Length: 52
Image (cartoon, rainbow, N blue to C red; front, side, top):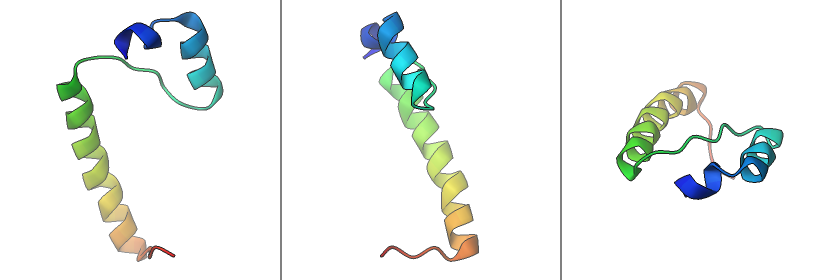
């Protein structure tokens, strides 16, 4: 995945779609996901979002 993210065309496409292409080891992704789940989980609970 890191190699793909370093390709200019791939990075540009992701950026065009609104993503931020960031590479790194799997542990970095796992840590990011934990932080995001905690942060957005609190938001979802606060506004009482329910799945359809």
